[in-house]
Every structure is written in structure tokens, then in C-alpha cells.
Amino acid sequence: MIDHVMTAEEKAFLKQYDITAYDRPSLTADMAVFAILTSPQQQEYRKDPEKYLGILLIRRGGYPYKDHYGLPGGFARKNEMIEETAYRELKEETSVDNAYLEPFGVFSRPGRDPRGWIISQGFLALVDAGNYHVRAGSDAWEAAWFRISMEQEELKKHVRKDSANITTLYRLKLEKDDVRLSALVKETRDFSGHHEKTKYEILEDAGFAFDHAEIIVRALKALRERTTQSGRIVFDLMPELFTLYSLQEAHEIILGEKLLTPNFRRKIAPLVIETPQIAGSGAGHRPAKLFRRNTEAFYSIP
Image (tube, rainbow, N blue to C red; front, side, top):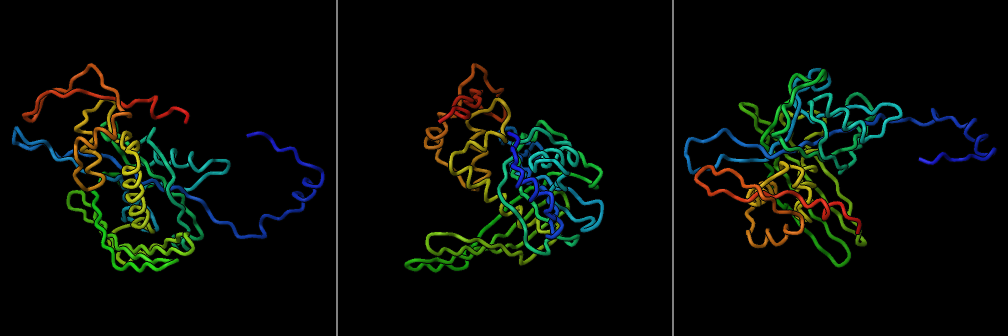
């Protein structure tokens, strides 16, 4: 950053300025880390192992919310950018590093943290789960992947000439072995003068720490929206080399719906490059060509 050259008047103003005159919140980063996971191999030769969307949670080792499950995250340090906080906390709490990170929301509802006035920046994080063996850090009893699913139900929709109101319920379910977490989150969207205001309310919460049920709902919504828009974000869930079948499968897992293969391949064609390599045959399938992302299409300047 270029140093700002202050005038004498500005220096005099800052010298007498009392920053303690205003209450100040603490700032944290919370990361919703997603990956495409594979169930244990089935016995049937011709049946592919099931794949599903997973999210990384930690079981809190201390108060508040001891033994509850929440997202990896922590407090920002002095002179630290919030993105640096996210990368550091993710590494410290789970051993995951070099993940794709993208901010998607700020969480500032009063009372969201019993320790005081704490505002959190939410980050969407994506990893290729095959590259990581997660482990818990000092602030957690354990770190583990959970299968995540979310259903939505539109409760009401009122559209008028210059305004609209839409209320939607999101039913969130997370599972790992014998652990079951669930939540019911209400989203209210008000449109007035072509501008949107959105509010969230946690109606039911079983097992989550803080307001992390809301953060997870909004993170999964953001992932689905970005997947629909261009699909570029999905590449950060994939290994370096992949088949077009596995790339389409990842899209379908995120969106929760089947896609038409010809349409999908036309849309994704500019983003991939065919390689000379072939995927090994398995589960009764013929060998398939391997592709990689087209970095020129990803990182070219418009």
C-alpha cells in the first residue's frame, strides 16, 4: 500500500482523536470448507462408489459451546488481514492449507456470540479431499468431514407492482457415523424499489455452535449459485487431472440435480483442456480421457 502523506492539520487531528470513545467489536473468520467425498467401496464390481458433498467441522474443545460442532475459524490478530486470519486458522485447526477461499457474507447479529460483540467474516473454502488428512488443532477435540444435505421450501411469495416478499425455509442435515446435526433456518427476502434486503432466523438448532447453522446454509447457497453461474468454482474440488464424467458428477452433487451431458459439455468446453493421459478402467467402465483446467481461460484479463 502506498503510504499516505498527512498534512499538519491531519496529524493534529489524529493526535487528539480518541479511538476508545466508541465501542469496538472483535473480528473473526469462519470457514465453510467443502469437498467431494467418496463412500467406502461397494462390493459390486459394476457399481461406482457413491460420492457426496462433505463439509469440514470441528468439535469444540472449550467453552462456549464445548462439545458442539462448528466451522473452523478464529480471531483476527493485530495487523493481520482477515484473509490471512482465514488461512492461518484453517491451517492451525485442521491442517488444511492452500485451499480456495472466497468471502461470501458478514455475520453481525447482536448476541450471536455469548463472549461479547463479535463480528465474523464468512469464507467459502474448497479443497480436493484426496490431498488432505485433517487433524484437530489445539482449539478442537476433533476435525471431521460430515455429509451435508439441504432442502428448501418456499413458504410464501407476495409480488406486487413495486415490491415483493419471499419467505423460504432451509432444512439442514449433517451426518457422520452416529452423529446427527440438524437445523431449520428461515430466509426472508424483501424487495422494494428494486433493492433487496435479506434476513435469516434460526428456528431450530440441534448440535451447532454459535450461529454456524445459518453460516452453513448461506455458504451452501453461495456454492450452488456460483456453480450455476459459470461452474469455475467446482474445479477447486477436483484433482489436477479429471474425467469429464467426474466433473459433471461434482456439479450434480452440489446442485442436487441431474444435468444433460451434451449441454454440460458445451458449457464447460472452454474451461478444460484434453490431455494425452487416460484414466484407468474400473467398476466395469472403459478407460476415459483425462482433462485439466484451461488456465488461460481462468486467468486471462477481460
